[in-house]
Length: 337
Image (cartoon, one colour):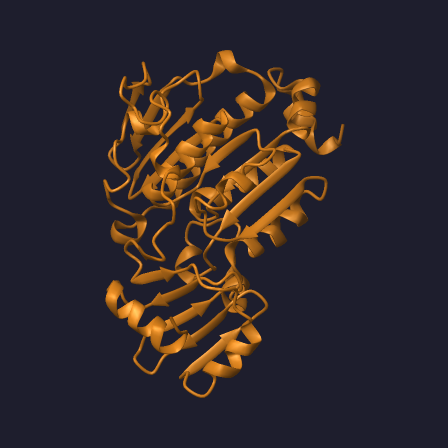
């Protein structure tokens, strides 16, 4: 075994046998923001054999306070988060297979993302994606560690198909809304603690220490010095996911092409054909107040004041508005129907 894991193997519950299991395991991290960067850091340093992660966004200056894998150079280069994270993580552990994917997680691609995965780690920032993840994992029999962090509050749990309730047993609707970091802020220690709770439950599961699994939803407020654990208990009898096997999030034939990113004054419009960034650079150059680009994305400052961010997979972010109608109008004006 690699000497880098010597201290981890000295921890008896893992040992050499557990380290071998980690090296043969594969995890998927959804979202490479605050939680995702800490989760990926732990998984790669621990020697998990395959670490696959997916994120739709790019690194901005406001991320640097809490998203641990990024730096000012990533902001200046305009790197997608998945790309910037991959560059850092490959320098940390070259033995781990890292798969970085720049994409939105949808009904159409979730099964492909889950291919050959043993465990999923939730680094998302919205309940729509969490419920998609919940339903896909429970349909496929793959456990996932749920985590959330906002303000000075955090929560986490590991949800295991056949052994625990699913997320829908606690929260019935993905439209429940709630506060986000972009609305009321967050302090970075909360992120570290939540992700660390998620990571340790992941390690327990991957090495086979199922008798040590924490069977509760943990919540805490670091600033107010409060903490609480709620036993997971029995699944809700009429849960449409883990009991009725209906998996509502997977029954949507097609996701909305336009989605408002809560608290960010950004609307994402997807579903279009792939975009050739060089061709679009040439098209937008005459009208854009400012144009920046790299191999992964193209940013165009519009005369109206908003900004378009184009990705090769066909997604476009309209930044500077939360008005869906205005975002679609600008998209149609500059990108087309």
